[in-house]
Amino acid sequence: MNRPFSLLIKPTSADCNLRCEYCFYLEKSVLYPRSKKHRMSDEVLEKMIAGYLATEQPVYAFGWQGGEPTLMGREFFEKVLSLQQKYGKGRTIANSLQTNGTLLDDDFARFLAENHFLVGISLDGPEEVHNRYRRRADGSGSWQDVRRGMQCLERNHVEFNVLTLVNAADAGRGKQIYRYLRDLGVQYHQYIPCVEPEPDGSPMPFSITGEQWGQFLCDVFDEWIREDVYRVSVRMFDAVLNHMIDGSYSVCHMAGNCCQYFVVEHNGDVYPCDFFVEKDKRIGNLADRSWESMLSDPGYLAFGRQKAQWNPQCRSCEYLTYCSGDCLKHRIYNGNPPDHMSWLCSGWKAFYQHALPQLRELAEACRKDPAMAGKWEDAPK
Image (cartoon, rainbow, N blue to C red; front, side):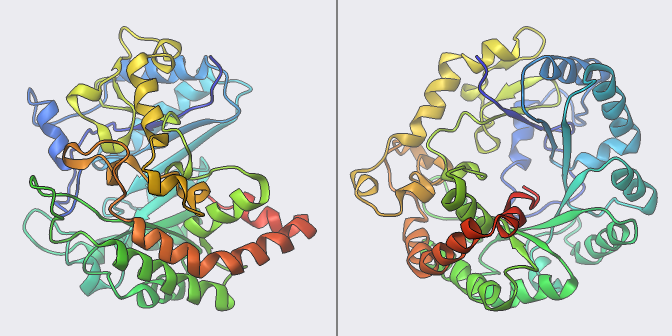
C-alpha cells in the first residue's frame, strides 16, 4: 500500500514544563503510569526512523510534538538527524518542531536554523490573554519566556510560525490577536479552535462556541484581506486557496478521510490521530508492527472512514468540500456517532459565507498568474 503518510511524534509523551489549563494531552500520561518521566529511547527512535524511511513517500515528514519535545534536549535531535542521514540517503526529509518556546536558547536556535527545522511556537496573544491559560505549575504566566524564545529564533534566522489556540480569552478579539502577531513580525499564523467537553457533553469553560469561532475567523480574515494577503500567511486561508487552485487538502480537517498520519508515542505505540490517543484506538507498537501492516489495519481504516459519515445536513451543505463535516474531535465527543453535527458547524458556515467570494477572486487571480499561486504552495504547513 503506497498511500503517503506523515509522522507526529511524542518523544516526551505528555511530559511538559507548563500546565496549560486547556491542554488535552496532559491527561494522556494515565496511559503510561509505570513512570513519571517519559522519554523516547534510542532503540525506539532508530526503529521508527529506519522503518519510516524504508517506505515510499514523496516527502518524509517528521513532526516533533508533545507534551514539550524540547525537554529531550538538543542532543536527542542530533541523534534524529544522524539516523535520518544513515537511513535516508537520497530522500527528501522535513522536520518540524512544535514547542511552547520557553526552553529555547541561542545554541538550540542555531541548531534548528542550520538543520532547517520548521518551528511552531504556541502563543495565544498579548501577555494578559496568553497568560490566562498558558501557565507554569506554580500558576505564573509563561508569556515572557515564550517571547524570549521567539527572539532567540529571530536572532538566529529560524523559520517559524505561531500557533494560537483560540479559546474563551480570545473570543471577540480576532482583530486584536491578528494585529498583535502581525505587528510582532510574525509572518505565518495558525489558528486552532479550543473545544473540550465536560463528561456530560457541555463545553469546558475555556472552550469557544461555533458562533465565536466564526466571528474570530471573519475578523481575522477582514484584517488579512485588507492589506496583508502577500505579507502574511494564515494557514486556514492558505488551505482554502490551495483547494480552490489545485483541489488539494493541506489541513486534515478539510479532507474526507482521516488516514493521513500516525502518532508515535515515546515507547513506540502508534495511534491514528493526535486527538485520539486512547487505549482502544491503539493500532500497535513499532516493536512488532510494520508501517505497511498498520496502514492496512482494519481499525485504522475504519477510523479514517468515519470522517465521511456525514449528517444529512452536511450532504446538502454548499460548504461540504471545505470541511468534510469538520474534525472528528468536534463530532464524536461523549459517545456521539460520526454523523453528529460538528460543535463548530455554525462558525464554519459563517466564515465560508463571509470569506469565499473574495477567496474565489484571489484563487482566480492565482490561476492566471502562477507566480502568485506559488505564494500559497510555498507557505509552511
